[in-house]
Length: 188
Image 1 (cartoon, rainbow, N blue to C red):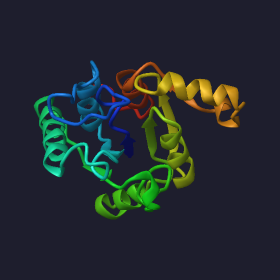
Image 2: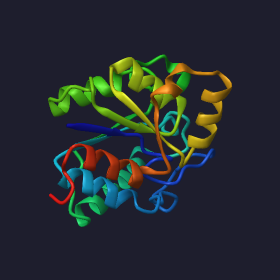
Image 3: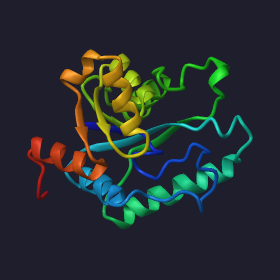
Image 4: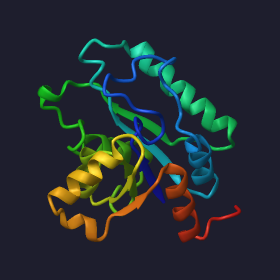
């Protein structure tokens, strides 16, 4: 089963000023172990992240690759593995198909990993994550870390009908435990 994760605000601390370097990239407590637990329980875990800081000139590709290499290494050290990290480096005004809430990143995940995103879990903290999940047929999960509280307030203000079924967790660690238990994968 496929689980798709947003990066900033779900796996690592987020900043309205962008995460621009390896030094600024700080995992949220419990997130690395949560990814490893999902992996060990048989889930394929992929990351789908908008990284417009590239197009904005705030950091270089080498900086982004260093962050992603560190993320992958930490997950390996925790006993898990990532199926892949997929990113959109375009500016929001570029009109690309890969920037969430569009589904190009999710299509890339399908092509690369050979797993459908339809019915997959998509854990995010922003409206763009929820919209991408909905558009791709994935099941959205909202975490309260990162922009999660802000997103929840937007959903409530708009009386968004997704609130009736949307699963909301304090963080990635709590979401991972719930998914593992539901899939009968605890203790594998």
